Amino acid sequence: MDTTTETRTHREPWNKGKFVGQKAPFKLKDIWALRVRLQMEGRVRELALLNLGIDSKLRGCDLVALKVRDVCHGDQVASRAVVMQHKTQRPVQFEITEPARAALRAWIRQAALKPDD
Image 1 (spheres, one colour):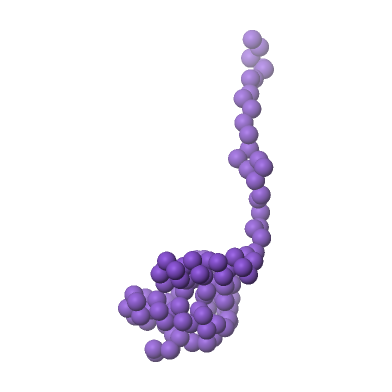
Image 2 (cartoon, helix red, strand yellow; image 1 turned 180 degrees about the vertical axis):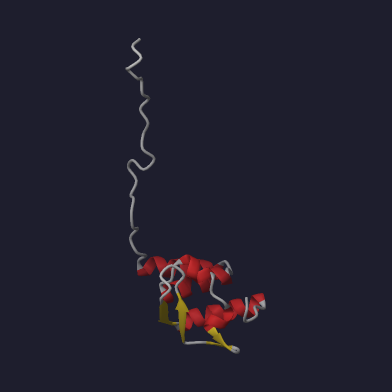
């Protein structure tokens, strides 16, 4: 066998036949299905994060970095919030809808969260 010739094994690419790139956005019925499932399972934290994520359109890293004081004023959940994005260092202002406020209130009450949590 010649040293200049190589025998290569054929390997399939990991993403062959898979969709790559940006995923399609959730449809409204999918969002409601997620909400109902989370409510039925009593997953208060996940429901609050889902609702807040939809309202704010924040990245996941920005969403989990939020503090209670970012969305609450005293005992009341704010109807609007302004958060600094980690990646772009730009402020993002968003409205917090009533379902998100209710889910946040329930989570804060259940977990006994403080303003720095």
